Image 1 (cartoon, rainbow, N blue to C red):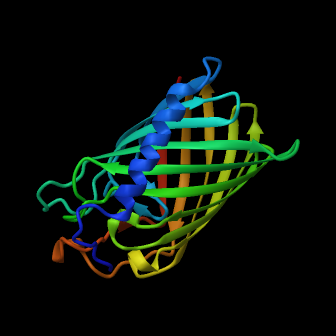
Image 2: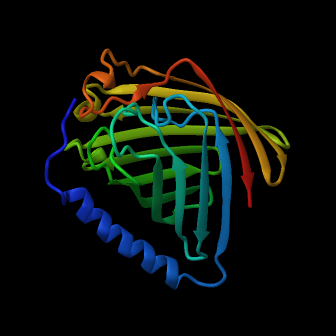
Length: 252
């Protein structure tokens, strides 16, 4: 595993400060006609690209987003986190995700998105500062298939450049039931000593316009033969494969 640098102000910090300024600028100058929406979600596990950010435990997340008529959007997410560094002093328990982006129609059926997301933690992860930024580019066909590529220049401040690629599909089965699936490939060797595939498939039931239930199966080719209890400074997220996930979402 890669170690983080000892510098208190890294490239990720500098990029994040610039990103935060842009986020606030877009947020406050957007037109009054834009739309607000958000949700509160209960998840059985916080699985992120094949590994758990909650040690396999249930967590609560919240999210709010602002959509501008011109295609700009900005949002803020918050989630509980619990990595496998529970013996470390000053471990992170909250993740904040501000983001800003722009959606551009290409044709009647196609549109693209460019965005940047910040990952901010209330404390350290495996004894290191871990705030970082990630840049995204997406391509969507109608409302049922999406392609996404992203890159984090310094993931978790571990001097690791991580690129990620995903394809996601969703199709309505009934008026209020939807099937969705995703396949991803993470070039995370600099961070996790391996590149790997991960995937998921599941069904969402929209009980009401504001309440949804989701049951999903996840798997990943991510493996780990070491435990974080042996070295608190190295980054050892818990792999989550062959597992069912359940979530309840209340939207507004």
